[in-house]
Amino acid sequence: MIDASIGARRFPKPIPFGWFSIGRERDLPAGVRDGDDVHAFQAVGRELVAWHDGGAYRVADAFCPHLGAHLGVGGRVDDGCIVCPFHEWTFDGSGANASIPYAERTNAKAQLRMYPTDARDGHVRFWYHPDPVMPPAWEIPTLIDEAMVHCGSAEWTVRSAWQEMAENSIDMAHFVSIHGSAEMGEVGSVDGDGPIRKVVNITKYTTAQGVIDGQLKVEMYGPGTSVTRFELFGKINLLSTTTPIDDQHCIIRMDFFHGGDDTSASISEPFAAEVERQFEQDVPIWENKRFVESPALAPNEKPITDFRRWASQFYA
Ligand code: FES
Ligand SMILES: [Fe+2]
Image 1 (cartoon, rainbow, N blue to C red):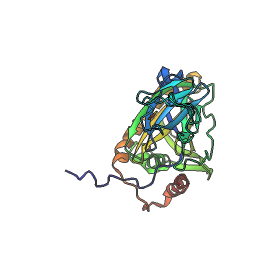
Image 2: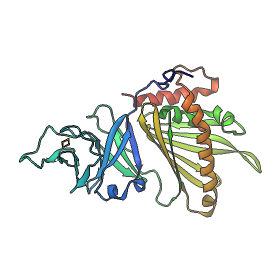
Image 3: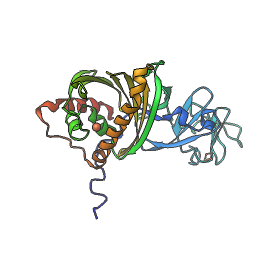
Image 4: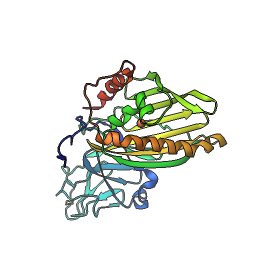
């Protein structure tokens, strides 16, 4: 029997800051979308709640500043305010105490910690930074063109950290050894030192006509969202979100979209199946590896060093 504490903290960095998905809007219960119910979830090492106040989704710490009840267990939404189940104090969309049923005045000290939110491309996101006063350091634009057709979803909880998983996209050698690619691809171009990074990978595809070069464009919008744009035999976009549950576990959600034409539609299912197959091939590596701070790299693995330098900006 292996001591469970050995290697338990395999990824030594803290939870990064950034925009993280709480999930797809369509997956939230109808009562939450309608502004009646509270959605409770765990992310960024915290207990959180989300609700809709009639104007926007709100995300807050789950524990009531009065006497600590969990707002997501028996709580409800009334007129846009979240209502605590314990003594029915209410809090508005800014987290301020809006009413106390048995007092004339509200309590200014009773302030919920709120997280900025944004709903886009089917996901509800919140901004997390360990320092509650740090405003969002970047925005995520709409990434999926309206004309594209949603054609599949997948979701996993993985015992790994975002950085370990994201590093895979520029780890060209593993595509051969783990995923069975015919030849090692290469990183074609990298654009962006700030929170948004765009990489073009040159990948080799085995076809009836032989091995041909394809381009895979990977855009990363901080640690929580990436989109992979594939255009070769048709047009497919893969929107992928990573939400840290704590510093050792993440939820990955993928959504596939095709270009709307027949060719794109016809490759969408095998494409999604292949991406999911490859993801699941990586999981046992991710869940059992440890982060090597100063890795021994081959001469053509410099993109790994570059990626790590980029990733380091997301730790406070
Ligand atoms: S603990 Fe929330 S109102 Fe008392
Ligand atoms: Fe992989």
